[in-house]
Length: 414
Image 1 (cartoon, rainbow, N blue to C red):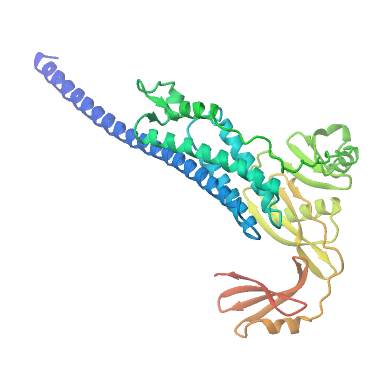
Image 2: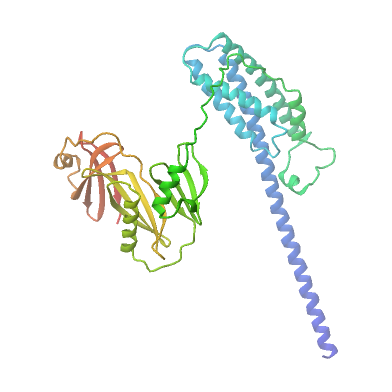
């Protein structure tokens, strides 16, 4: 390569290098500008949270002050307002960019005040003398702390305090020199925060009965029977307070109680298969019969990936009960059950249908053409479901079988 070409290549390299440096500088400047915008937005959001905290504590103080003089129904109204303001203060406090160590006393006070006024919301009548004394103590504490928060807010606005930054905490970056962080001021203020003391009118907490976990042997036997395996192959994972227990075998997780299996889930990946929907639905019916779920009828199918989910509704005589439904998921690669949800208990008593279908149909608009009717028990109420047509639209309407009133409408658009 002669000197002329080397000179051209060197010149082109310098041009491209300069262009790359200029582009990199522009991108850096743009990124820095956007980063500054994000920092400003984050700081403004945190400052707004602190403003809301101070405002909520101030409002709580004012409401508690008014509650000292409340009588009649106004007692519960003001207690409800005070509870809402305590919750608002706690929610705003949780968004500040520093840990709970600096806010331990504040959260404790708001929790105490919130629990106290919530208890007052559940009582009727006027406040007793002990309750009014406790309200006075909480009001004085809230007023003192509100003054401290307002003082810190003014210092933050004047630049005497600096809002903490989660970015600095993550990067372990120190604040600018001679800048005092809000978290430090919070910690100092909490050291001198006046505590309201022990509330005299707070009722003693009732001891809740401990959950009694039943023996899981019967649940293990029910799970092993449905799966067709030995009980020794099932490993107990945990027990529930209602007497049921969960067992695992490979990727299977089964929850059962003393009488039947309640849930089954297989976490394995289901690959694409050639099992037909008809064969999968037959497998679902066979599994449902083995699970001893009673008299049920298929009410729908849905494919989710490579699994066919078949829904069954319980039958009460010649009526269906959609509220007591079971669902079985069958894998389409090997026709194995990978999901099961047992039905809930049937409603008590035998439902009655005082009106026949023809009488209930009188509640429908004349413009609808009835295509089919069936009995349902929905929400514990006997009713008729009319499948209707309105031109190209399909409409399903539930009509109460006692009074002939419409209970629900479902429109299926074409």
